[in-house]
Length: 84
Image (cartoon, rainbow, N blue to C red; front, side, top):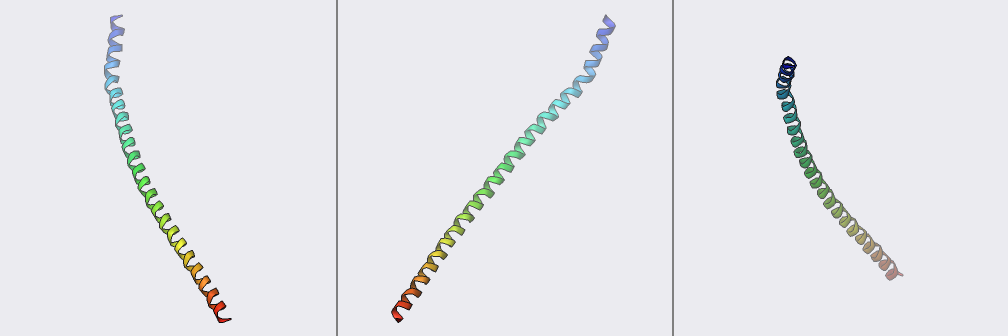
């Protein structure tokens, strides 16, 4: 019985540092993954904000272009009416 206990104790003493090292590596990787995913989320949010600004400015320029086109067509109609 004592011999078996010594074998179990020796096995546990040999395995414990390995298991604790694996647990520490796992915890470190989880922290690294959470940090990189948070950084990746921040980058995606900044890209999204940039694209939203670009869409708004393009929409503004398109509205301005449509307004200029409308003014041009109105002025052409007025010119044609005034010539008649």
